[in-house]
Length: 271
Image 1 (tube, rainbow, N blue to C red):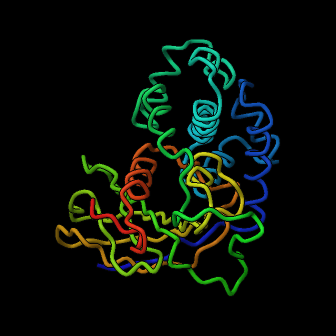
Image 2 (image 1 turned 90 degrees about the horizontal axis):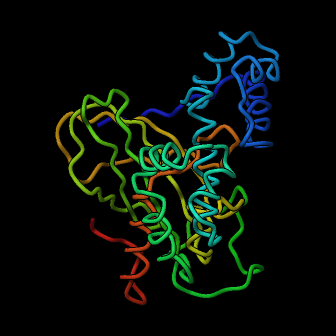
Protein backbone atom coordinates (compact mmCIF):
# COMPACT_ATOMS: atom_id res chain seq x y z
CA UNK A 1 0.00 0.00 0.00
CA UNK A 2 1.11 3.55 -0.66
CA UNK A 3 -0.25 6.93 0.39
CA UNK A 4 -0.07 10.32 -1.30
CA UNK A 5 -1.37 13.65 -0.05
CA UNK A 6 -3.88 15.72 -2.02
CA UNK A 7 -2.49 19.01 -3.33
CA UNK A 8 -5.01 21.90 -3.18
CA UNK A 9 -5.71 24.30 -6.02
CA UNK A 10 -4.24 27.79 -6.35
CA UNK A 11 -5.42 30.44 -3.88
CA UNK A 12 -7.06 32.41 -6.69
CA UNK A 13 -9.10 29.42 -7.83
CA UNK A 14 -10.02 28.42 -4.28
CA UNK A 15 -11.22 31.96 -3.52
CA UNK A 16 -13.37 31.92 -6.64
CA UNK A 17 -14.93 28.57 -5.74
CA UNK A 18 -15.54 29.71 -2.16
CA UNK A 19 -17.46 32.74 -3.46
CA UNK A 20 -19.67 30.45 -5.51
CA UNK A 21 -20.26 28.13 -2.56
CA UNK A 22 -21.17 31.11 -0.37
CA UNK A 23 -23.77 32.03 -2.98
CA UNK A 24 -25.15 28.49 -2.83
CA UNK A 25 -25.38 28.57 0.96
CA UNK A 26 -27.04 31.99 0.96
CA UNK A 27 -30.20 30.55 -0.57
CA UNK A 28 -30.44 26.80 -0.87
CA UNK A 29 -33.85 27.17 -2.50
CA UNK A 30 -32.63 29.30 -5.41
CA UNK A 31 -32.53 27.59 -8.85
CA UNK A 32 -28.91 28.59 -9.37
CA UNK A 33 -27.63 28.12 -12.92
CA UNK A 34 -24.05 27.33 -13.85
CA UNK A 35 -23.75 30.71 -15.58
CA UNK A 36 -24.84 32.50 -12.39
CA UNK A 37 -22.22 30.73 -10.27
CA UNK A 38 -19.53 31.25 -12.91
CA UNK A 39 -20.31 34.96 -12.93
CA UNK A 40 -19.85 35.09 -9.15
CA UNK A 41 -16.47 33.39 -9.56
CA UNK A 42 -15.53 35.71 -12.48
CA UNK A 43 -14.89 32.70 -14.72
CA UNK A 44 -16.42 31.44 -17.94
CA UNK A 45 -18.95 28.62 -17.30
CA UNK A 46 -16.68 25.96 -18.83
CA UNK A 47 -13.59 27.05 -16.89
CA UNK A 48 -15.59 27.44 -13.68
CA UNK A 49 -17.04 23.93 -13.98
CA UNK A 50 -13.57 22.45 -14.48
CA UNK A 51 -11.96 24.40 -11.61
CA UNK A 52 -14.87 23.73 -9.23
CA UNK A 53 -14.69 20.00 -9.81
CA UNK A 54 -10.90 19.92 -9.47
CA UNK A 55 -11.05 21.65 -6.07
CA UNK A 56 -14.17 20.11 -4.51
CA UNK A 57 -14.28 16.73 -6.23
CA UNK A 58 -17.87 17.43 -7.26
CA UNK A 59 -19.66 19.30 -10.03
CA UNK A 60 -21.41 22.53 -8.96
CA UNK A 61 -24.83 20.87 -9.31
CA UNK A 62 -23.85 17.91 -7.15
CA UNK A 63 -22.22 20.14 -4.55
CA UNK A 64 -25.40 22.23 -4.32
CA UNK A 65 -27.44 19.04 -3.89
CA UNK A 66 -25.05 17.94 -1.13
CA UNK A 67 -25.46 21.26 0.69
CA UNK A 68 -29.23 20.87 0.50
CA UNK A 69 -29.08 17.33 1.88
CA UNK A 70 -26.72 18.39 4.68
CA UNK A 71 -29.25 21.03 5.73
CA UNK A 72 -32.07 18.48 5.46
CA UNK A 73 -30.15 16.12 7.77
CA UNK A 74 -29.89 18.90 10.37
CA UNK A 75 -33.60 19.70 10.12
CA UNK A 76 -34.53 16.04 10.45
CA UNK A 77 -32.42 15.79 13.60
CA UNK A 78 -33.17 19.16 15.17
CA UNK A 79 -36.86 19.66 14.35
CA UNK A 80 -40.11 17.77 14.25
CA UNK A 81 -41.00 19.16 10.84
CA UNK A 82 -42.47 16.75 8.33
CA UNK A 83 -40.44 15.49 5.40
CA UNK A 84 -42.67 17.57 3.10
CA UNK A 85 -41.86 20.80 4.96
CA UNK A 86 -38.16 19.99 5.09
CA UNK A 87 -38.00 19.15 1.39
CA UNK A 88 -39.60 22.49 0.50
CA UNK A 89 -37.23 24.38 2.81
CA UNK A 90 -34.20 23.07 0.92
CA UNK A 91 -35.53 23.79 -2.56
CA UNK A 92 -37.52 20.74 -3.65
CA UNK A 93 -41.05 21.05 -5.03
CA UNK A 94 -41.61 17.29 -5.03
CA UNK A 95 -41.38 15.22 -1.86
CA UNK A 96 -40.81 12.13 -3.97
CA UNK A 97 -37.82 13.69 -5.75
CA UNK A 98 -36.40 14.87 -2.44
CA UNK A 99 -36.80 11.44 -0.84
CA UNK A 100 -35.14 9.71 -3.79
CA UNK A 101 -32.23 12.16 -3.77
CA UNK A 102 -31.86 11.93 0.03
CA UNK A 103 -31.78 8.15 -0.05
CA UNK A 104 -29.24 8.15 -2.89
CA UNK A 105 -26.84 10.56 -1.16
CA UNK A 106 -27.37 9.60 2.49
CA UNK A 107 -28.11 5.91 2.15
CA UNK A 108 -31.38 5.88 4.10
CA UNK A 109 -34.88 7.35 3.68
CA UNK A 110 -35.37 10.64 5.61
CA UNK A 111 -37.40 9.21 8.50
CA UNK A 112 -35.01 6.31 9.03
CA UNK A 113 -32.10 8.74 9.13
CA UNK A 114 -34.00 10.83 11.70
CA UNK A 115 -34.36 7.76 13.90
CA UNK A 116 -30.67 6.87 13.49
CA UNK A 117 -29.45 10.41 14.24
CA UNK A 118 -31.48 10.49 17.44
CA UNK A 119 -29.33 7.63 18.73
CA UNK A 120 -26.58 10.24 19.19
CA UNK A 121 -28.72 12.40 21.47
CA UNK A 122 -26.99 12.94 24.81
CA UNK A 123 -23.82 11.09 23.80
CA UNK A 124 -20.38 12.67 24.05
CA UNK A 125 -17.13 11.73 22.35
CA UNK A 126 -15.24 10.10 25.21
CA UNK A 127 -18.36 9.65 27.29
CA UNK A 128 -17.65 12.39 29.81
CA UNK A 129 -19.73 15.53 30.32
CA UNK A 130 -17.79 18.77 30.24
CA UNK A 131 -18.26 22.50 29.99
CA UNK A 132 -17.51 24.29 26.74
CA UNK A 133 -14.55 26.06 28.38
CA UNK A 134 -12.95 22.67 29.07
CA UNK A 135 -12.94 21.52 25.47
CA UNK A 136 -9.50 20.84 23.97
CA UNK A 137 -7.70 23.50 21.97
CA UNK A 138 -7.24 23.03 18.23
CA UNK A 139 -3.99 25.00 18.07
CA UNK A 140 -0.94 23.96 16.08
CA UNK A 141 0.42 21.98 19.03
CA UNK A 142 -2.79 20.02 19.63
CA UNK A 143 -2.37 16.28 20.12
CA UNK A 144 -5.24 13.77 19.91
CA UNK A 145 -6.64 13.03 23.35
CA UNK A 146 -7.29 9.48 24.48
CA UNK A 147 -11.01 10.28 24.36
CA UNK A 148 -11.04 11.37 20.73
CA UNK A 149 -11.95 9.21 17.74
CA UNK A 150 -11.08 8.81 14.08
CA UNK A 151 -13.45 7.97 11.24
CA UNK A 152 -12.33 7.44 7.67
CA UNK A 153 -14.08 7.17 4.31
CA UNK A 154 -12.44 4.95 1.69
CA UNK A 155 -13.87 6.04 -1.69
CA UNK A 156 -12.67 4.24 -4.86
CA UNK A 157 -11.25 6.66 -7.41
CA UNK A 158 -12.62 4.38 -10.13
CA UNK A 159 -15.64 2.66 -8.54
CA UNK A 160 -15.94 -0.36 -10.88
CA UNK A 161 -18.59 -1.74 -8.54
CA UNK A 162 -16.46 -1.27 -5.41
CA UNK A 163 -18.58 0.35 -2.69
CA UNK A 164 -17.45 3.13 -0.39
CA UNK A 165 -16.13 1.83 2.94
CA UNK A 166 -16.02 3.54 6.33
CA UNK A 167 -13.53 2.65 9.04
CA UNK A 168 -12.91 3.51 12.69
CA UNK A 169 -9.86 3.86 14.90
CA UNK A 170 -8.98 5.07 18.35
CA UNK A 171 -7.68 8.60 18.80
CA UNK A 172 -4.05 7.56 18.30
CA UNK A 173 -4.84 5.76 15.01
CA UNK A 174 -3.02 2.68 16.28
CA UNK A 175 -5.36 0.30 14.41
CA UNK A 176 -7.87 0.86 11.62
CA UNK A 177 -10.86 -1.41 11.13
CA UNK A 178 -13.14 -1.47 8.07
CA UNK A 179 -16.54 -3.13 7.73
CA UNK A 180 -15.31 -5.43 4.93
CA UNK A 181 -12.00 -5.90 3.12
CA UNK A 182 -10.77 -3.18 0.79
CA UNK A 183 -10.50 -4.61 -2.70
CA UNK A 184 -7.37 -3.91 -4.78
CA UNK A 185 -7.40 -0.45 -6.29
CA UNK A 186 -6.80 3.20 -5.47
CA UNK A 187 -8.90 5.00 -2.86
CA UNK A 188 -9.38 8.59 -1.85
CA UNK A 189 -9.29 8.55 1.94
CA UNK A 190 -11.06 11.29 3.88
CA UNK A 191 -10.21 11.18 7.59
CA UNK A 192 -12.28 12.82 10.31
CA UNK A 193 -10.58 13.50 13.64
CA UNK A 194 -13.38 13.95 16.20
CA UNK A 195 -12.48 15.98 19.26
CA UNK A 196 -12.93 14.40 22.67
CA UNK A 197 -15.55 15.79 25.07
CA UNK A 198 -17.80 17.24 22.36
CA UNK A 199 -21.43 16.19 21.78
CA UNK A 200 -21.55 13.32 19.31
CA UNK A 201 -23.80 15.33 16.99
CA UNK A 202 -21.38 18.28 16.71
CA UNK A 203 -19.31 17.01 13.80
CA UNK A 204 -21.56 14.61 11.88
CA UNK A 205 -24.86 16.51 12.14
CA UNK A 206 -24.24 20.15 13.05
CA UNK A 207 -20.85 20.62 11.33
CA UNK A 208 -19.88 22.76 14.32
CA UNK A 209 -16.53 24.59 14.02
CA UNK A 210 -13.91 23.13 16.33
CA UNK A 211 -15.56 19.75 16.76
CA UNK A 212 -13.44 17.94 14.18
CA UNK A 213 -10.62 18.19 11.68
CA UNK A 214 -10.18 16.60 8.29
CA UNK A 215 -7.35 15.17 6.22
CA UNK A 216 -7.15 13.79 2.68
CA UNK A 217 -4.88 11.12 1.23
CA UNK A 218 -4.77 8.52 -1.51
CA UNK A 219 -4.34 4.86 -0.68
CA UNK A 220 -3.24 2.19 -3.16
CA UNK A 221 -4.21 -1.37 -2.22
CA UNK A 222 -2.51 -4.27 -4.03
CA UNK A 223 -4.41 -7.11 -2.33
CA UNK A 224 -7.62 -7.39 -0.25
CA UNK A 225 -6.98 -6.01 3.24
CA UNK A 226 -9.00 -5.73 6.47
CA UNK A 227 -6.57 -3.49 8.38
CA UNK A 228 -5.33 -0.71 6.08
CA UNK A 229 -2.05 0.85 7.17
CA UNK A 230 -3.30 4.39 6.72
CA UNK A 231 -0.74 7.13 7.29
CA UNK A 232 -2.58 10.14 8.70
CA UNK A 233 -2.00 13.29 6.62
CA UNK A 234 -1.85 16.79 8.04
CA UNK A 235 -5.19 17.38 9.72
CA UNK A 236 -6.83 20.76 9.25
CA UNK A 237 -9.97 22.72 10.03
CA UNK A 238 -12.69 21.93 7.46
CA UNK A 239 -12.84 24.40 4.57
CA UNK A 240 -15.83 25.75 2.68
CA UNK A 241 -14.72 23.69 -0.33
CA UNK A 242 -14.93 20.37 1.53
CA UNK A 243 -17.95 18.37 0.44
CA UNK A 244 -20.43 17.82 3.27
CA UNK A 245 -20.50 14.54 5.15
CA UNK A 246 -23.79 12.97 4.08
CA UNK A 247 -23.51 9.21 4.47
CA UNK A 248 -25.49 7.62 7.28
CA UNK A 249 -22.78 5.00 7.90
CA UNK A 250 -20.45 7.18 10.02
CA UNK A 251 -23.42 8.22 12.16
CA UNK A 252 -24.22 4.55 12.76
CA UNK A 253 -20.58 3.72 13.50
CA UNK A 254 -20.31 6.57 15.99
CA UNK A 255 -23.58 5.66 17.72
CA UNK A 256 -22.58 1.98 17.97
CA UNK A 257 -19.13 2.86 19.28
CA UNK A 258 -20.30 5.29 21.95
CA UNK A 259 -23.27 3.22 23.09
CA UNK A 260 -21.15 0.06 23.38
CA UNK A 261 -18.17 1.74 25.04
CA UNK A 262 -16.99 0.28 28.34
CA UNK A 263 -15.72 3.01 30.75
CA UNK A 264 -11.93 3.19 30.70
CA UNK A 265 -11.54 1.58 27.28
CA UNK A 266 -10.47 3.31 24.09
CA UNK A 267 -13.18 4.20 21.59
CA UNK A 268 -12.32 1.37 19.21
CA UNK A 269 -15.03 -0.81 17.73
CA UNK A 270 -14.28 -3.77 15.49
CA UNK A 271 -16.84 -3.47 12.71
